Length: 183
Image 1: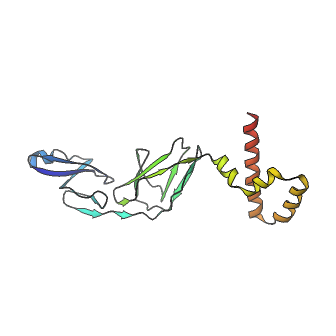
Image 2: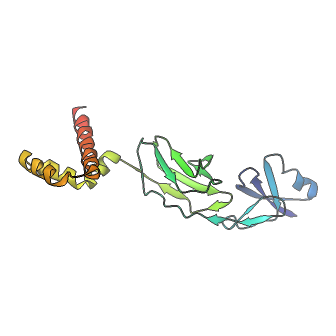
Image 3: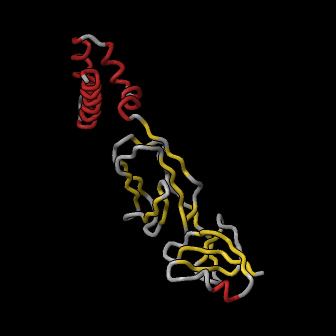
């Protein structure tokens, strides 16, 4: 009995191990897209590139988000250029070192295949409006302030572009919040 491991040739994703009676049966598992490695191996540590060659998988050192906003395009960057992954089951290749997630509607399952390894990631979705609003101290202060307190606060705290952008973000949360209330 002969043992082999099937893998996808283009991005070296390990598919499955198999057993067969002879070399002719073994050769029948290989085609232009599927390669076979003669034997079995630890898929977490190695990947096959041909019948005899195993290479060690390289660890990714990317900082992953703890959540992504619901229905908002998000870019995760810092990947190598030749990094293959499965995002919710669909294969992809990093685009100039980043993964663009367009309008996610469900939690993300991210698995790296081939050369690079990382534990399977489950990235939940966040309700970006509520999470952002609740974490914003300015929003909380705005909800409890009088008009004169708001004027005083603005004169004291809006002094440069960064602070103006921060306040603008809070105002966008406020407009969105009011828009949701009107609906």
